[in-house]
Image 1 (cartoon, rainbow, N blue to C red):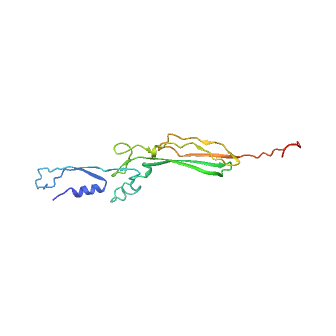
Image 2: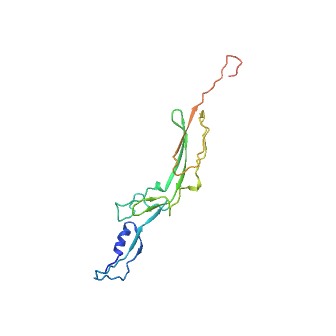
Image 3: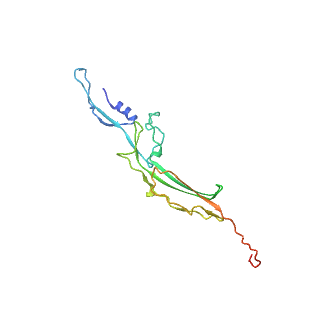
Length: 192
């Protein structure tokens, strides 16, 4: 007796899912070659949502029985961070104060085709990039006071409207030594 279950199980191992199995469980083939006995099994590509809370293992096989088959996507498809670094340096390039760092994180849900490994970024089951806590800004940063030096910027400007495709922000504030002033005079009544 024939059954579709073995073939269906094999397709499932390759990332397909069963929609309908039109093969009746009690069907018996006969030896009449003049009468066609047709049935339809409908399969479709299984789609899996992937995001930071359900990330899968990037680079691992989607279908464990297919080690050379499609792989789970890298996390940059659904989790990105934009970084800000402000460095405080003397004119010779040496650091004079601790760097200021900040970051804004963006996440989304993508859908992965379990048959092809394609990452689907729009449509059913996907979401747009969203900033964690709604924060899309690097605030202005006041330059620290370095005794005996003056900064070329009192503060760095705020960077607003960041998105997942924004480049990292790297700023450098340069400090110049302030010369010392020793007042002197030929006037013998001058204090000092």
